[in-house]
Image 1 (cartoon, protein in one colour):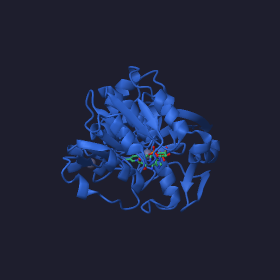
Image 2: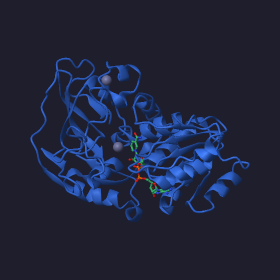
Image 3: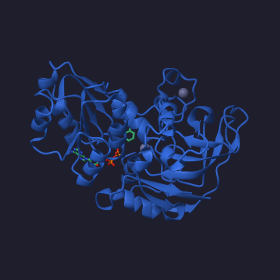
Image 4: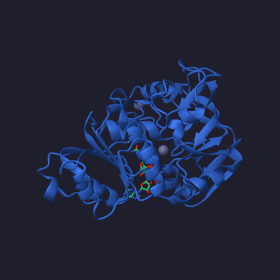
Length: 344
Ligand SMILES: NC(=O)c1ccc[n+]([C@@H]2O[C@H](COP(=O)([O-])OP(=O)(O)OC[C@H]3O[C@@H](n4cnc5c(N)ncnc54)[C@H](O)[C@@H]3O)[C@@H](O)[C@H]2O)c1
Ligand SMILES: [Zn+2]
Ligand SMILES: [Zn+2]
């Protein structure tokens, strides 16, 4: 089969690989129909994720059809249309029993990281019963691909951890696919002020179309501007969806007393925490690796038309041209790419 393989920092190749086989009774083999590329795949290619060994097939998102299911898989059988979760969960360990699938003792984020992933014709899914979801008949598979990772990430790490409530004020720092997923799902709760901050003006335009009440580039006046929009207080919730020191520092300037900073970004460098100012502000800071515990709930919102993730798809490529898809996704400022769909 064809697969997009990581060969060390800066090196990737679409090549022939042996198709995966069932290794454990709880495995399923899925034939992919749609997959996509995540910012985290770019982090791996930059060498930021040393736990990903050269030789690993990339990708942790996708939709497909079950080709084979091991003898202990009870919820899925060959021929079922399925959504693949970016997080693998055994469903039994202490962490899984606490709904923290991201820290599953025999799973977590392993796909396209510690084991071969979804940017291929076939993938092996361990613990299939807790790591796959049935796709409803007639569903838009491109749209559902957004449920493997980015929608639960924006919702769980940003919106739920950020404790967004009706009438509150929210700022989202970073308008990449994750920030935009937080923007879409924040609107379940009808915040009164919904600000998006990003240096990319194209993404700010998208954010306005997706429901931001205000969208602007970060500069020296950002904190003042946010205070003007919030009666001088700052925002109740600020979602960090970038992962660099400058954006987390900005979040600390924007949060109102009593507010929450919900960090989503993957940070590679240490960041200063300004307790000399914030110690008295009654704030909460949260961090989270997406658990994908809300995927089924979000899938119902999508199939009911209450959430439209298809609007995040800007480009489509066949698997043969996945290298071009990477170039397009990696140069988002020029290409205007948000999510690129790979049709397998
Ligand atoms: N916690 C999790 O479970 C989880 C899951 C998936 C992704 N992530 C992380 O979430 C982050 C966002 O992912 P993405 O795919 O949307 O990334 P992305 O790179 O596509 O988007 C980041 C956006 O931030 C903007 N930006 C850069 N510097 C900025 C600044 N100083 N202020 C405001 N905006 C700035 C960029 O213009 C870009 O639009 C990444 O760090 C990613 O690794 C975390
Ligand atoms: Zn991802
Ligand atoms: Zn587990």
